[in-house]
Length: 481
Image (cartoon, rainbow, N blue to C red; front, side, top):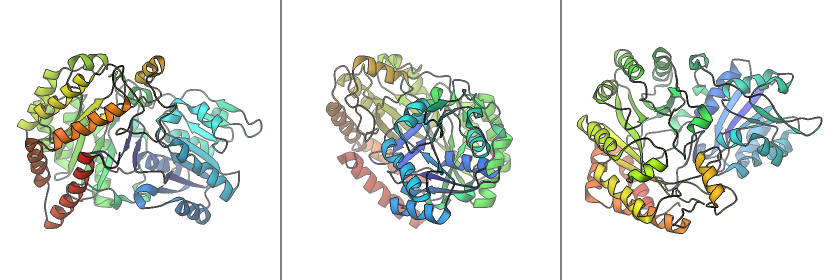
């Protein structure tokens, strides 16, 4: 039985380390640091079994390898859980060797993340200091690891047998249908004050509202990580967590994390009506698809405190949308964004460029479409072929990956080429896209209007101006890529 566990985002760079979202903060216009919700869920599960836990987000909290070593020596955990990304996995897993050097070979080292979920056995085999990789959902798995006498009985693992040294794959772990069974994340272990909205400088946290997505976008990890079936927490369960955040931690700003928050109309409206009754005055952001939004949903969301919706528009070429299996039309995107503007809802638009079939003309169509739609904030991502996606299979088949792995790359610097464009050409096109958009007077006005709308004090105005000017300079001139 494990008595102490240390759960970390290792000191290897500022990234959002959610399984389907592995986003760097550098080079991004919209992406901001989010609290390590995955670690907090695992910590809550471990605490329910009597395990003492600590959570450390070293990149956000200003820690380094020396800080990590000091924590190991002082806390002396028997279990180390590391959240990894495909971009940083080699450096992330150095933490395993550090832990074993400082505390001995008996400390159990565990990795979680989409990359190890897909390549669990390979990851354990190639990293002799890594004991276990968790495949699929992790909350219950990590609790069973801490309490099990025989790891072979724990589903969803790849682990190294300590007697033979061989890597063992256990049975698949089915997705958890009833998400209400999970405890609320252990926010008492997180540095909540470090995660703030950039426009208001108020503390913001993440709420996981549902999991799973039936869409089949070729580049997305959601079906791989959380399955194609949408699984919804009950509105009462979500509101209970929101109340805990408000009453216990004084947090009133939220990001609703979901593969597609607005997919089930009845559920969205029921949740929003409950929030409106029981938690007036909170504010939140969510994501959506342009074909899962309508006036009824938007009105309920607005009344419940939603002040921003993020959409994956992805491309301004209908042909590319079809090839990426997005399942939307340009006209539907126009309708959805107009509907949001009519309801005075802030829109965050995401585009992906560099898919195998894209030409320079296609990329330029996307940028023209972004300008036409008039989103309040826009992010251009270079395509990343994550293992476990159809895109990965395509680029490996057709030799479009110009590097052996994704280490050191990210959404602003991709190792992927298209059939007609090199990685260098794609990088230049992304820089041009950001300049075209963010030096456009209409876009600048919309951004300023969006920011000003959320300002409530002179200090917030100063913080926003300072943050925004630095971020804008870096985006327009390509710094941090």
